[in-house]
Image 1 (cartoon, rainbow, N blue to C red):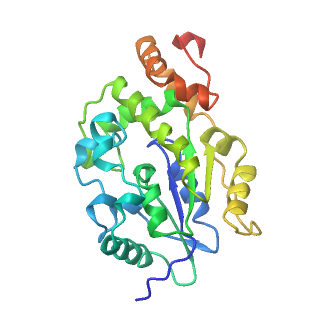
Image 2 (image 1 turned 90 degrees about the vertical axis):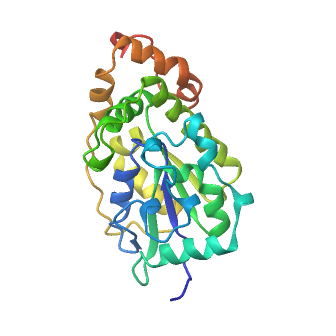
Length: 257
């Protein structure tokens, strides 16, 4: 099997930020293909490319108590691991197609991935921290896509830390990743054609005959409405610097939403 793999596209961002809907939309492009599961779940990858600490770190991989176990960069380069990663991804892309894959936790692995794929392209998705934190708590309790992880009790503090730390790393990558684009979930769902076409252009892909999907435009409001005043204030206390950085409204009480 040839290990040639040109200009792969990696999508990442904090969990619950919209990486899946972006990935599913872009995979419909005639020149793109990739696995049907998250890249980190593919068989054959070395441990440092997977959730090797088990389900306790599910959706909390950037939290301070787990981050240092998962964060890797170009200094972690290993020739044997490079071959494993390249062959694993090559086996999951159709012939004559360009790889596109997504793994939220690749937020912590992007610099290492760039050392393995020097011509890679990265797209990070950022979403409102209040909505994401609500989703993390809820889906750690029960995620219909991963029922085997049911019952992971999570505080709103932990969820907010996850969002804050993950997006701090998203920002830091601007200094290190050569082909890197950050988009906001809110822009994607409100202006899907504009945002998707901008991503295709960034990746050097044509937009002719590309089908632009419709997205649910109400999820942020629905999820934030589930938060009580304590949860709103806790998220604000922990995540405010990144909320401000990405120009999200800083809330003090639910009634102000």
